[in-house]
Amino acid sequence: MDVNQAKQEQLLALKVMRLTKPTLFTNMPVTCEDRDLPGDLFGRLMKEDPSTIKGAETLTLGEMLTLPQNFGNIFLGETFSSYISVHNDSTQVVKDILVKADLQTSSQRLNLSASNSAVAELKPECCIDDVIHHEVKEIGTHILVCAVSYTTHTGEKLYFRKFFKFQVLKPLDVKTKFYNAESDLSSVTDEVFLEAQIQNITTSPMFMEKVSLEPSMMYNVSELNTVATGDDGLSTFGKMSYLQPMDTRQYLYCLKPKPEFAEKAGVIKGVTVIGKLDIVWKTNLGERGRLQTSQLQRMAPGYGDVRLSLEIIPDTVNLEEPFDITCKITNCSERTMDLVLEMCNTCSIHWCGVSGRQLGKLSPSSSLSLPLRVLSSVQGLQSISGLRLTDTFLKRTYEYDDIAQVCVVCPYVNPER
Image (cartoon, rainbow, N blue to C red; front, side, top):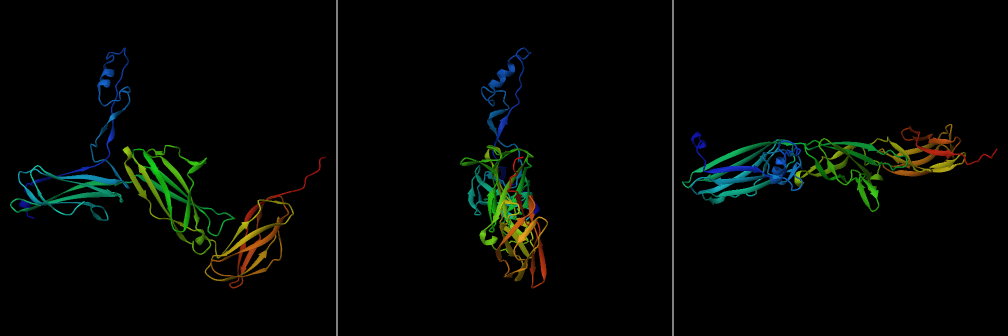
């Protein structure tokens, strides 16, 4: 296209308007007392104002809606909608009109046109209308590129385009924390608690429609954001789930490994994928937004080559009376072990049985249950300690202290003096 053609007056006009929800009209009520100079003038004017609510003229909000006066803000997760109109301002009939709308982001260029076929002809004072929609998935600068090409009645082909730049902002600040449930009675792969902190960083309130965690294939998830009240659960945030600007909420989830993964000690190691958060909200007049985080990862706790945990232990035992416990020994390594169990007495805990027992070979990711008997010579809360495992293949020793705690009470009653 040469310079003269570029400066040629176009026969078609292109108009682009963003489609958004209207807002409630607000007015500024002015009142005075009856003894003041204006008297009831302000009151009569407000009653005659069509934008006020009848019987409640002093309220700021009215009954009317206001159309958007500017482009406004676009936030990540919202749907960008725009109305595109091409109008024939000339007195000529133009042919082969092709309207194309592309959205240029920092990483890609997207075609948003509903149809890529050309319109045969456009008569004077007629227009071609199109509405485009796009769910915004990137923050930063976006450029809407609208291009129009057509042919005049003389057969000359003309082309022009317009650019509309806008910024996509971040609506929420999401922070996550992981807590490992290190329970003595748990399985090899413990429960994981996820705390999600969600902050509204926009300038308008949000209605939080849904905040859920979609777990990975290795976990089952339980939401801990409701309080059981009868048959139905009540949200910990109350009935009205609104998040005011700059307010923060904390959501809690419990993840448990599925049985097929919990039985294998070597499966859940190192960095594991937990899942992703799915957040849905509504803003002005029900305008919807949705945001999904990337896959959340956490570092699985390391248990070394061998892990020893307790499966069964009583809460309360009697002083100097033997009680039974069941230990679970799991091979977390990638090699076969030949284990020997040694039981070492402490000042309060005394093991019953033979120390130095041969437990035999234990293959990788397998486990065995081991019943043991122990007694305590001291009252109070006592720690179960003093177990030692030795791998005879590599001559490695693993010591286990503070495995669990048990409450020791005295069953005897002192006679009355």
